[in-house]
Length: 113
Length: 114
Image 1: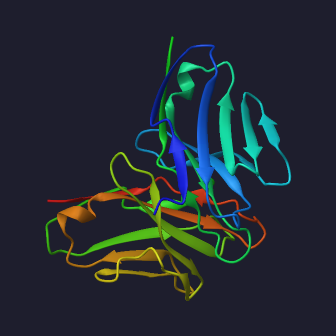
Image 2: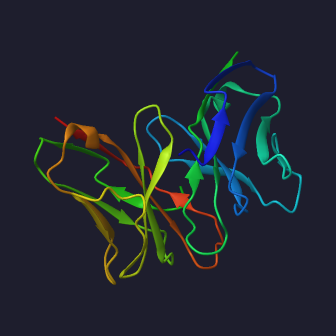
């Protein structure tokens, strides 16, 4: 059972455009929602994370939007660059107890010059 | 990746052999997690350990897989009698009691079973 559903599976964006990746979850106990960036042959690197007490968090060109009632959250990459080309994973976990993250299936982003 | 060290980075095993993957967490981190990533898929949680204790192994296959995190030394993920379906990237991650939910991943160990 996929605890976190992610879409799209792949995304092609023009340089300078906005990349949007969406995730949805069912478990209302989740209270931590990170996004990870993974380059080929590398491990996932934490990009940005949000907790459900805020609806938006911005760090540089990366923004997470969070909709608690809809149980959805999304990653927006503004002014997308070819160097942003990577696979992006959303994830969710429960703050108390085991910290194990449940990951989405990933979105392969390609930013074309 | 915040200092989580995994080795070997690449490992080739024949069917039926054993694979041992090692993970040294970020210095000072006492929580270790193992995840498996199959080609073109997301990461799947396998096991969560603290020093000398398995906290959650709900993602571990019931047979052939085991993990430990001894008082001294790295965490070990052990796969006995490997089969082709075990071919995957295995990622270790660590966190500290003070880092909240922030989990840092290593670069992974790529296991190929031939």
